[in-house]
Amino acid sequence: MVGFADCFRAYKADMDSEKPVTDNCISNASKHRFKIKLDPEVSQKYSGQPIIVYGISTLELGNHATNNSRTFKIP
Image (cartoon, rainbow, N blue to C red; front, side, top):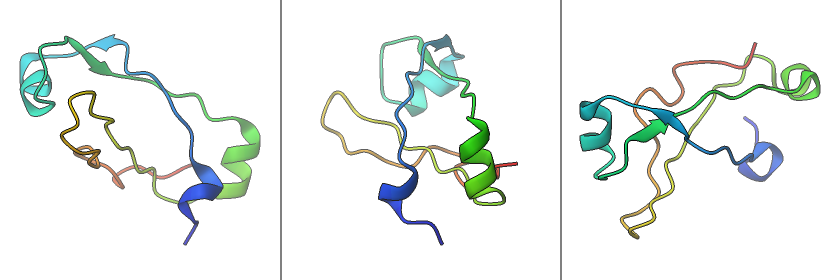
């Protein structure tokens, strides 16, 4: 298992999302979706590892793993 500090990256959710996503995020904002491009070095080093995504709360409601976290793996 890879340690958290080994692979931490931060990406901004800046793509429009549907109302159910906004409701799940407990937010009035409309942009909660994102795409990330993995560097070849990351893909090579962490191939096969699950991708775990945490939503960072700006309302101090806790930083929880998003739905479908661990569903996808690094190719």
